[in-house]
Amino acid sequence: MESFLIKGGVPLHGEVTISGAKNAALPIMAATLLTSEPCVIRRVPNLSDVRFMGRILTWLGAKVAVEAGTVRVQAKKIKGQGDYDLVRKMRGSICIMGPLLGRLKQARVSLPGGCTIGPRPINLHLKGFAALGAKITIESGYVQAAAKRLVGTAMFLGGRAGSTVLGTANVMMAATLAEGVTVIESAACEPEVVDLAKFLNAMGAKISGAGSPTITVTGVKELHGAEHEVIPDRIEAATYAIAAAGTNGEVTLKGARADHLHAVIDKLHEAGVAVERKGANLLVRRNGRLKSSDVTTLPYSGFPTDVQAQMMALMTLAPGISIITERIFESRFMHVSELARLGADIEIEGPSAIVKGGRPLSGAPVMASDLRASAALVVAGLAAKGTTRVNRVYHIDRGYENIDGKLRHLGARIRRVEES
Figure (cartoon, rainbow, N blue to C red):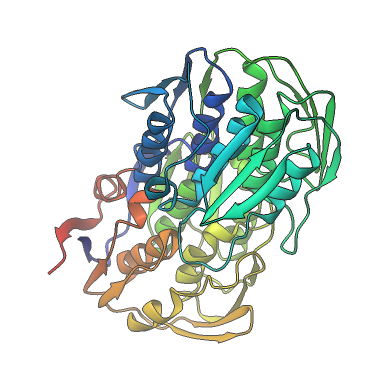
């Protein structure tokens, strides 16, 4: 396994190009299973999760070619079962179920894996499939859905923590080839759902309302091939913005979408960080001293749970007390104990972390537990004095394209080494 060795204390300066969004690319790749015709997807990030999805599509029978950020898929003949050894490694792989059910009227997929950030059940996915007329069974670690025909209907997909992004995507994909009209209430509003709907409509689907809590899908008999460019990754953009603020640097985020980052930009402003639009880019720099700020994660357009850990790392540097409340996932404070190894003063009380900021951080060996925790530890290591070693960086490679190379381009002293 590999680690990052970071010598902190260097302000980041320069420009960084934001890659395509992983959480948009994965369901869009899965959606290519809905047609036998060729599909071309551009601005696809080079990530381990994307490579896993390519292997899953290949295993299902599709032809997949990847070259310089462009993925070409043709799924002429496919089978309806996902391989356990592939699917178990990545939660996002569950989004193959909707396309398989839509096209083949049957799907058998292993229950998925992913980061250890608390239970993320797929009951809302299955609820949506059942509403379309599928019979659902779970046996021996596999979930199976089958139907003679799928029929559109009205359904409510809200859950305990709000809407479900992958559930909305999965049901939306299945409904494109259902008979009649499907109305999804309490649909996820994330930009990644909108991007998927845009791709599906380019394939010939009839979807309206994406980006709102009510999505309407009018079923069609078949879909055709299409070309699409994936949206920029708002979580990657937020991470580099926070890294710039944490190191007291000045960084231009090339291609970042401010309209996808309203909640993050608002909290950065509150914390004393200036974020300015510069054409199609965002310029991030400190606007004086960092200030404490309270954050509560919420479904979009609220503050994203995927930026909670990075924001916590920033708040350890801000004098005063910040309260970070996690409303989406139950176990997403695993980075707290590792930040404490760097000198952070954080106490957990129920769903909230109380950050007593302003104490200087100092380098130490730390262990990444999940994708976004890894990013938080890198941010903290960049701001800390001395050397920080972040172990198990395979987590971060799941969601950040060439993060060490991009950070070195901004002046960071970071290198990838083999774990000792």
